[in-house]
Image 1: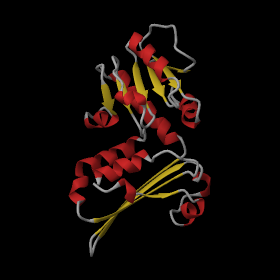
Image 2: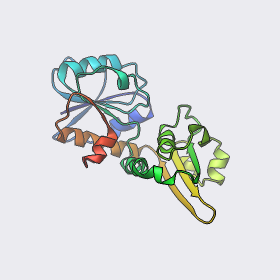
Image 3: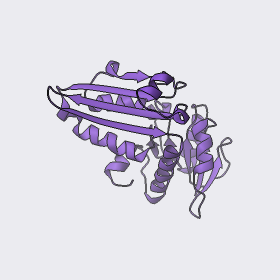
Image 4: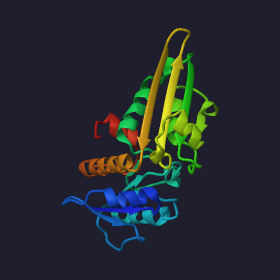
Length: 224
């Protein structure tokens, strides 16, 4: 099966280098709508400029779109092909978040502090932190966001070589005599590339319907 990667940023470039070419799949950069009618997989890791032509291609060929961008226009579009929404592709982190979604309400009423840290260049809304806040029933305004490299290095213990590419989340839940702390650290690009490979493999193995899937549904169905 053909797998096209659309996007020329860091993640798109990493995917083109890291996704596995095998007998079942061949990786190509997206360079405009292909003339082929072969059913394919399109991984969108771009800004959205290509979405219309990707949608046209997927509609024409019944191809699957794996959408990696948060807040994509495809989320509210009428579609006639399978779409998999993956705002986070670190599978272990996704399973952790799913656990919080299922059990977060148990901690209602406790003192909860949520801290997130990403590289200083990140300007977009931290989607993972928002999802964690929603799962724990706390206001998004209560999220503490850290972009100061000195604080990241000194207080959060992010190693210098990872300051330019990392995702850190820490949840602290307190009552008067007990504290529970949960922390995640993702560094570099490779965890995301490995996750995308797992998602691509799962898509190849399943007969998906022409509708939108959350990546959480893949986890619930044990496809990942």
